[in-house]
Length: 366
Image 1 (cartoon, rainbow, N blue to C red):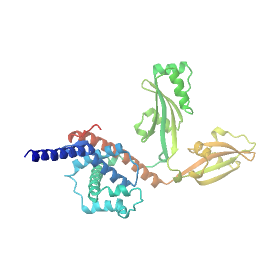
Image 2 (image 1 turned 90 degrees about the vertical axis):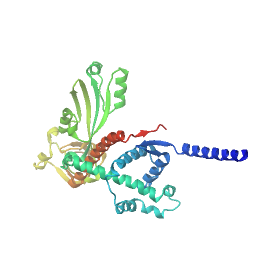
Image 3 (image 1 turned 135 degrees about the horizontal axis):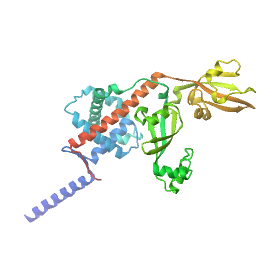
Image 4 (image 1 turned 180 degrees about the vertical axis):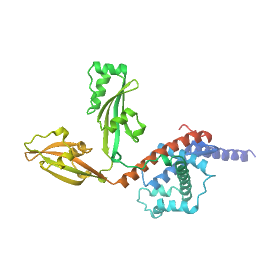
């Protein structure tokens, strides 16, 4: 009898040790409502994303956050959104059917063989529900806020690089005759820190001009490159940077003006004056692809009537930008898509903030 009891005890102990080992290997990473999600669930999600996006390397923490967000949407939508099997199958065929004939030497072979068809479909359903909910939220609340008018400013990426000082610290800048040099930021920072001057230095990408301070908006509108502004109690010294977004979608019309002994009013010289005066010796070069231009022209000619002086074969020339051609439909679509991306990001953040509390999200410390 004791022998039987000891044998049962050994079996139970082995079973418990095995279960504990499995729990340790498959750790809980978060809980949503009453459901536990483990490191194994996350690994399946990672393999799914790798296959969907066709990538080998992936940021595990980023996918973890994305997975949590997707599951929160799924929890909200699983009783509200009904998915047709044909829709899920269409998504599967678009993204995953290609892997059914995958070769063993393919970098994603191991990834594909470590996830089942059902696990892929489950992850697809989660993503489709999130997509449907986000589209509904966008259409119901933000559709009329999307601007689709295109103008010349939309061909540029815009950045504002600036230093900000309060009055006390800016007085020290002036007293020590410190130059804010945007051609050598590190030297400027070193000089400020040597003099124990407190400052803020930032580079901000401008997505919507109307959302920045009116004083800075005005500088963008006036095409000022360098600005010095007072906003509240702070002094702002900044540089406005504009870069062509898509070089292959832009074409320039240039004038190449040969300089002679005549007296040119260089500063006030414009394309209109040259084109309407037969006394100028020039050639007009139309529809040059921006991507084909040299860096000197790209960096110096950004708006109409911008000009530079060049030497060539013992002669001097003025190169002037007279026209910028761009595909309005291309930039209209880009503008709409960019706005949608930003709005959807805001919608998602607000949604996650609200429903992570409602669904009692608990993230474990790993």
